[in-house]
Length: 89
Image (cartoon, rainbow, N blue to C red):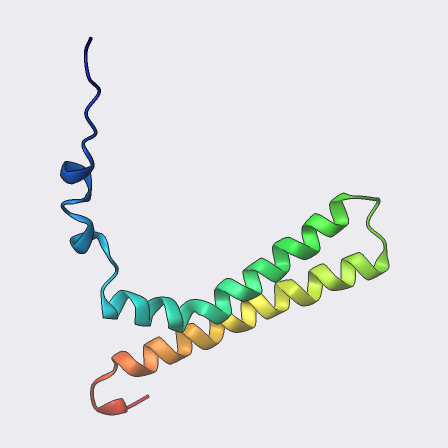
């Protein structure tokens, strides 16, 4: 009989190196408003898939799309301002 041996030690040996760094977590935190706005947009689009979209559905999708664009704009402006030397705009 052949025994099946797990390779857990070999697979999990690098688990400490696979964790996100503090810089990566900070980047995710900065992008969180964009991510949440995108989730709201997908929710609005999924809701409209269940039936023929009416004016309310169209408004929800349009507002969600505008929130995504606004969040992206704020993120772009914040990162562009942070990358300039001396804080000059």
